[in-house]
Length: 140
Length: 140
DNA sequence: TTCCTTATTGAGAATGAGTCTCACAGGTAA
DNA sequence: TTACCTGTGAGACTCATTCTCAATAAGGAA
Image (cartoon, rainbow over all chains, first blue to last red; front, side):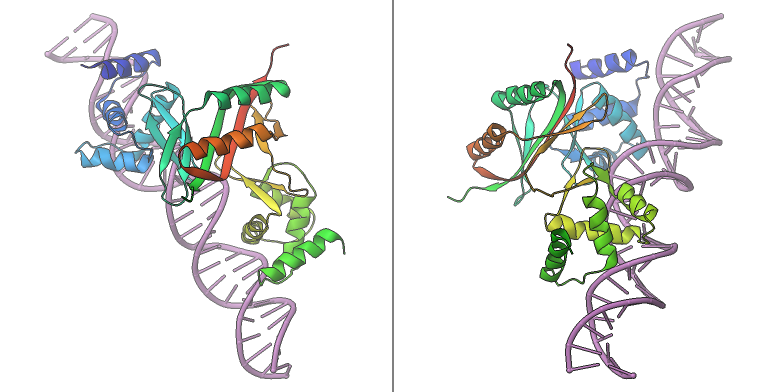
């Protein structure tokens, strides 16, 4: 058993949940691909691997994985959510090219600090944030 | 006729659309309230004012108003959109207090500039952005 | 191991925001 | 007035996600 499987068992135990083949398969599938996929894509991929799992279970398991920071759920305004594994768990935001659909990950400490500063000015502290840049290529 | 009604007629003409009571009522309703309301709230308010209009027309008209920058459409990750009138059309982003649900509007030029700088570093220019801070009150 | 209790699952129904369809109403142009 | 559109309302439809509930399978106890 590798570390990731062990970690999955740990969080399931912590949550008082049982370790099942379906839960392992779903985490394995998400973990296997760093793309920003939606639930249906993930569901289809698991089925294509010959594992029989239902959509309901995919959604239910993703919730657990998101809650325990194994997976990040993001809303790019498309009417459905996308998910990515948080293997190294380094925070980043997303830039979406409106011409190609490419999703670029970026992190900028100055931006993080500025957000907190802005919130502070209003008497708040940032709990989480959504920062997405919809961009197009610079003309050369 | 006040300026805003005239402006509505102008954009309808520009779009090759007719000026109708329903379209005027929908814009009046959105304009009357600076809250960040969803389509259903707006629909109910119009009906409560005794104006008979359908949900379909509310959605269709909001699209026209959004396209012509009379209304801003925003996605706070709640599974439905919220709308606000753009009376002065000054850009701002939103901060949502997770304890009270309050929505605070803010604008920060440094943040705007930083976003563009980040996009440039990846060879892009920003077309639009989504920036939302989910916050909680600072302890005193 | 076998049993027993309970959590989990799958299939499909339900939900809910938003969109589409289409017959009818109301303007518009000639 | 006629002929022709566009706009509207009612409700069907879509699609991602959630819910329901009977059947199944963990996993602790004996």
